[in-house]
Image (cartoon, helix red, strand yellow):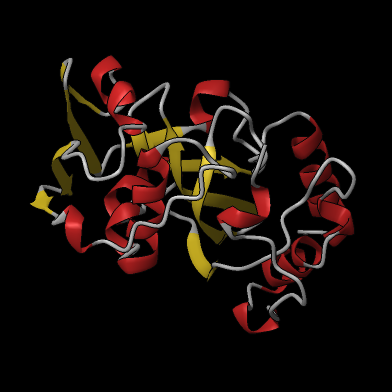
Length: 228
């Protein structure tokens, strides 16, 4: 039997242990946000599906972070995929993702042809057609702003797809709900003090997605978490 208090307490503990996403993570910039809700009998799982910019890894990535009882081994908490490949060209050469040449090219003067190729799930994207609007006082890397433009224009291919999500959700779990706007916790305001997570606990207990109501002040937009 699921109990609201135990679900919320679990989430508070998970957040304090950094076993839930921290959107103000200094190493990762979150660009796109989804929260998927699953239940099976007396078990539950929340899956945070995000589009992130992480130049220390593969640049623009899809990230999946499951949270719930049974997700207790560190390697199982984080899944990453690379649906987007960014290839840059600069005076020093070319590089994919967040390679050295790519980083050199990120801050190239405006007007330089720094992009060699951009693909999303194998399909070439015309970079010049994107509405890229850098705000370097918020985030200094041009690749981040390309990611923001992609998320704004066509986010679906950037998120983990069904087969990628299947790796972190047991087959007997039923998908109840996907939320794209919620009030994510902060250090000062843990999950139990948000609108979203006690409400999601009610959805899980009843296995009824109609119990979800949008929160008054969502913070799931990348601009809410910048600058760092």
